Length: 260
Image 1 (cartoon, rainbow, N blue to C red):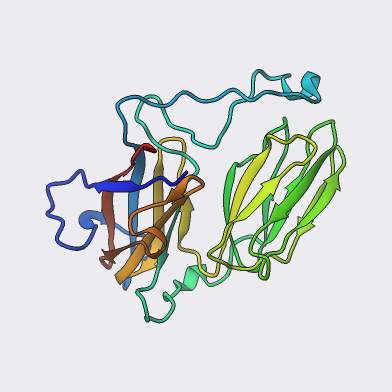
Image 2 (image 1 turned 60 degrees about the horizontal axis):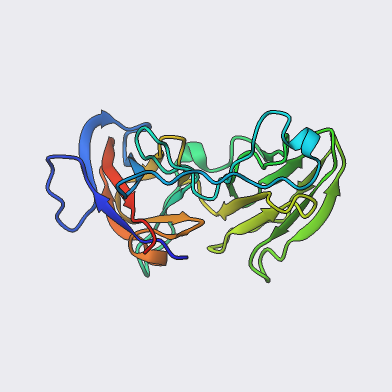
């Protein structure tokens, strides 16, 4: 089911074609670099109830810490923030790739981790850079497997058993607009999403729906939003924003409209 979103900028600034209002907050790095932040919220009268998962295997372990709930759409009941949404920057159509800040030329760490501690993937959504290695851990006392599938050419995927207390390294993931879905075939309710980028300008929203992208090149670019339910404003092309040098731009609230 496709979900569309609309933007509401909680600011006295006028929105004149660009979805950004600069504030007085100093952006990390200064110079020709800036930052952008915002919050993705659920657009509906009431927050949807989280669905309980039917656990039909390894119940003693999987339910040892309580019931399990779906993470397909996680909405904060207090502020309607939508968790696990990918947000990233992209150049305008026909423009060269975004410049990368000197401090971000290479990832600070080569490994990124996803775990299966209690019959759910942690985290449910993960962003990483081309060249990083995805370490798929199993810190549980039972066996899991990791079955990942992406674009059939760039990230055709694989499927490996991960015994209790062990891990595997996935070192061939490539940057792509197509996400990588991760499943555990042993426990069919377990899913996660990975997106691989060829730049550092991406984020995944937190429990309040917040995101921030720092040390981005000043100037015009596009903001692209994707949740496993669907694309954000402008769909795959995103929408234009402007990043002001030395400042953090506040996008305000970006609302997910409920499915019709």
